[in-house]
Image 1: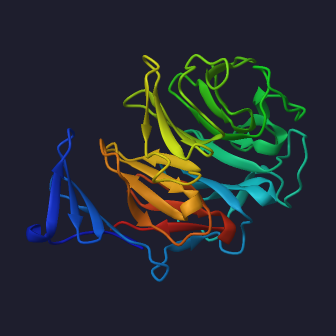
Image 2: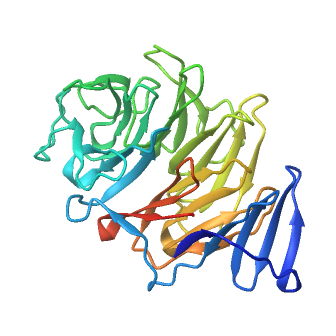
Length: 328
């Protein structure tokens, strides 16, 4: 697969749509393009022959997540090695910024146990879903230990509102409210800044009692709409929850997705889904209910992200690799 800028458009081979954001979506044979005004972003199907750039080759073991900061520094949840690895731009080797370099797992504050999600702020501080320790850890840049923000610091699982059980997703908004996919409790939690107890947003006993979540997994905050996008592993769909009025809708139903593990979006409001059970990345254009495959032939893609240049990153879990597909 390759992401590139198209130099020419053959309009007699296209089907043209216009969105409310004045972007054009153009289907060219079996390839999908997104045209913001005069620029065209081109997605060519990944067919197993054209591969992306492998990041962290022979250094990672079943990586579960990637996050990219404003400087294009990558933070990778190296799950089976129980650590978070940091790769500065164009670096071939990563450095351990959370957990132990040797991969040792423990419940101590200097260790992790199967971390699955990571978020980084502008200071290089990171938030980690320390999944098998049933907690969310915050590591300041340069520190050798983390602080528990949600869940039990001793790694005890539970279903009370101050406990978590195998959290697999984490994000936060501008007020530093944490949103957590409390996966094995099948609920979505929110923790306001510095709170020791959370609120159930979706799931049993929730504010949104009619918004169905079943093993929520990947989670992202959409600032423009003040909403959350949640990948539902067991109901095979993406749920968007509007935080202003708690309305919700489904993006990509169970007939199109199989055990989706992650979701993200681009500046045009298009949604990208790691369709894990089908081994592919699906793109849902803004306002459209049907997805298009833009990358496939993965062995359990569990995370999908975009950097500020709209390059695409995929955590190909069972192949123990991160793949980058460059747009230029």
